[in-house]
Length: 406
Image (cartoon, rainbow, N blue to C red):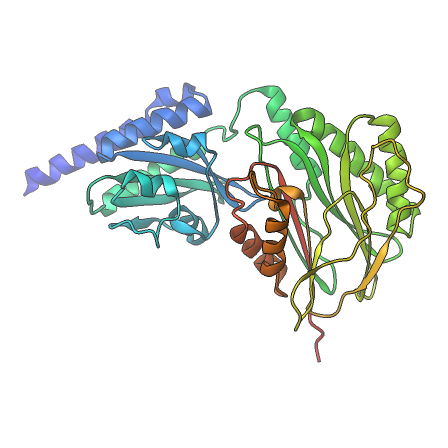
């Protein structure tokens, strides 16, 4: 028995050395991921291994590196935190073992199509924050042991030390940093309101022109903006940044959102010629009881009031920004915002699908939106509209007026 214990200890040391080899530190992130996944497949005698990194803005896990599941990465598979196998690991921040895979426990079609029987996954952390999930799988039934779990956690720690960017091109990284800097890392704490948002890139580069913004004005009104600059990549991100900044400036001198968008249209037409932009600018009154809105070619937001079905806000369809055509006058609409109501603003990537008229997605969104806390509405909408594999950028901004306390 003592000899068996020594053999087991030697095997455990060999496994640990395999994933902490000093030569790994000389690899960049992509190569390190590939090497670690190759080694863990060999050591645990599994058929698949994959790393999914957390997109904090979208609250989704993105397939980033894989062995045996390369299709998952090619398709840019995304899974919302809390959904399916990987989402459950991210939500609980604990290892999860599935000894018999079923469609109830696993929602990733790639895993199901492969016929995987057993799965083990662990969370990945950096500086105490969740950054992703690492999981392995077998085509045969497998009972994973506590030692297997500890080894996979060690691999996850090793992977977390790497540079976790998805590209090592400096221009790409700079563009990503620029776009992330223009999206609020944290929405403001606004008395009487509850806010939540999502941003999901629909392009492989992860960079685009969709944005949202929230700011408090000196008058006490709250400004809400959501918009979409045509195109993808660094150029769209830069233009989006300039438009966002300009609208903030106009918001300081305009009490009417239509007037602010009129000024922004002149700016875009003169300085950003050829770049079509849609935008919705809404202002919520200091008492939170009213919303004043104006839309420049943007889809109408959805308003859901307690006791009533959700409905699109009847905003006038003014032209987009930068068309070169000056409308006689832009319009604004004012609607009531009673306690418990929720306003959902979004870009077209949420509701547009190839080979499908946009009305189908819009109708589905209206049916999905119900008065509830903003974070709950965000999660429900993103799950219901199949936004885990978008073909276009998605920005979503939800505002919930808190119920009045009696």
